[in-house]
Length: 631
Ligand SMILES: Nc1ncnc2c1ncn2[C@@H]1O[C@H](COP(=O)(O)OP(=O)(O)OP(=O)(O)O)[C@@H](O)[C@H]1O
Figure 1 (cartoon, rainbow, N blue to C red):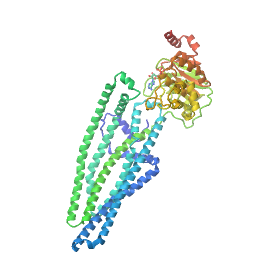
Figure 2 (cartoon, rainbow, N blue to C red; figure 1 turned 135 degrees about the vertical axis):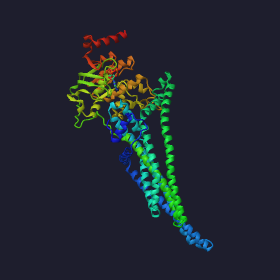
Figure 3 (cartoon, rainbow, N blue to C red; figure 1 turned 120 degrees about the horizontal axis):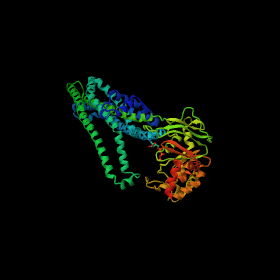
Figure 4 (cartoon, rainbow, N blue to C red; figure 1 turned 45 degrees about the vertical axis):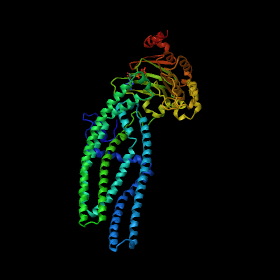
């Protein structure tokens, strides 16, 4: 699996290592994670350049408000002191209306700044939340698109699922990270402006401030990295928790969970696992709170030391009372800003570590893909398909699912695949549809390797109705239209497909006909029986109208009459097309032009129904077994 950079590889390696979950990350790794911020910024920028610009402009103005307010505050105090002294000299204020006017202006300026700060704050928050929503939508769509482009093999791999899960968690709330970064930039400008003010009076106060805050910062950074390690190493368990929650409370499983009485077992298993996670988290949270409190006390000590110095110097006459308020205010403000800045810096680097999961997910490349100089898929297919010594092992499996497959599937012929459970029928079909590529040998289409063709075109030329077809909780018409989703607006085509697969009677009996939502997930949904669902799924084959049609157990759930009727129409479905039919029912198998018998992933025999019966080998044996069952 391709990963993004050193940090990703290291984190991936850590997972499998024997070191404990709360192990540390080096400071460099933490800093390295910050390299995820520019790509994040580019993603957010692409979401809405206008909102990002507005956000930054608002923050820039807002960052200068605090120093302006403190300075006006200082002027107010100095002015009050001056006016009060003069008034005392003259025995009253009344004669000094002119002096009060200056004070009034200053107060008005301070009020104006306070209102401005509030308005800017709200406008920034608005920009942040709008951007956050847009960003979540964008990233979720990208994630879905990317996941769909990946190989089927990825989806059968538990590590991939963990990675997908971690990436999925990153689609929401990532804007918080960018707001934090923007907020940090804003705080930095404010700190710089306050720093200039402080430096004018007492430069060494700045040094004191920095020294007092470093321990708290390092503590934060350390615990952030530990939290990440913990969350990372617990991904499989968190996935199991989600799975248990799903099995324990979902429409798909409710029936079986009830009749087998699994509820207590599932709840108990959930609790045991959830408690372990809670305990691991708790011990970290407690240590974090303890150390955090101690280290921030050091910062507070620094602040009061500085405050004492300023008070002493004011008393000694070196500063005015206005200076005192300005300095104490600036210092206090800077301390909380710096503290927030440092804490959020380590928080940012912590969150940036999580971003690694999102970006490294986006960088996984599918192995089954269109080659650079792809050839167009022939239409119509002239010769057909040829398997030449094809062998395939599922990823991570030592056993060959199919091996030495050599046979042809001629254009226009209907070929049935027969074999016992696990013989390799579905695997053969997955190879034909290029859901996987062979590990050995090759599959040719009109004399060229399947891998030379454009993948989208190839998939478009093939229609597969799997045994475990999906029951989409969408409308009846959409459930048929998924066969050729681009034509979903073509109602006559959908209705004709339904008619040919015998789904029309089912759909017409629904309260809302073709617009009826199927399945139980949504309140308006109506569920169908297994056979009714199969008729709907079969409608997709007619809708697809592909050059190569593959039907995996198309009639397994149909009653005898429906099966008979479907086969009456089978010729018409496969007319002029190449078809592959998988079935355990010999009544179905007989419809095919030729039959390929698989055993243990190898071709055992090929021929017409009559030829194979005459040969008296496995096909004849299986046929006889089934025929006996009917007698
Ligand atoms: N996703 C998978 N990962 C690993 N092994 C698999 C996977 N799918 C199938 N296999 C293995 O590959 C072999 C062939 O399976 P396949 O599903 O092709 O059989 P089949 O003939 O379609 O069986 P059935 O009649 O039960 O549908 C089996 O030994 C099976 O255990």
